Image (spheres, rainbow, N blue to C red):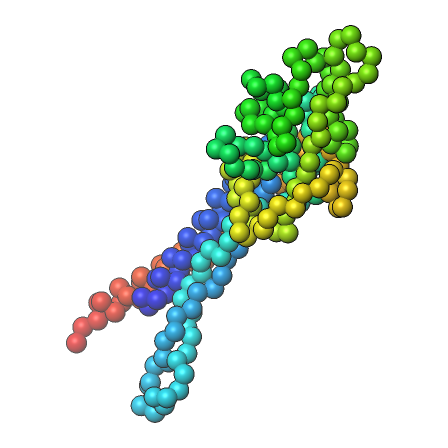
Length: 260
């Protein structure tokens, strides 16, 4: 019965994590570029001998595994593509297909994003709204009047007195063997981990990389119906685990109430 209390508690904790993940997904259903989270659970077992009720247990027999509850196995992001939403803004950029844009973080490390609304930062570089520039850096002239980003990542600008567009740089993409292993940093920014593997670089539209789409934003990949169904399932599972804890508590109360 003591194990029942523990097992029921692990079930309640697991479903609480599930509900928190679903709540975060639903809260970001309208966040551009948001990738929904998913939690995976694993069964816990304890190595323990079976009870020797008849006094005939073989002392050399292997110890048996007994149930011991559930635990979080992994919390990952699902990188399915979201809906491409046309904005017509030249500073909105999305990736249609696989890949991430590489960022140069202030601490000198690299991070990755699926795009978003851009700006020219204080150093004159093309960057995200928070000022984080892309890698390699793309310098935008102060007198630039128009920005053009091609599907292949070629960045050009229009400046006064020039009939033709000027070359500003080339955006590159990176992909991972296991993007679910990327570490989320908030704001649609991710870092590589041992689980994700090393970044594999390439140009947009080549070698399986996605193409860039200027004037578009990638919507969230959260599907409301799936999340609501998952929320109801998690709620019912939480209630069932709570019933187990309640039943075990009542049985212990009965034992404590026994009289010789």
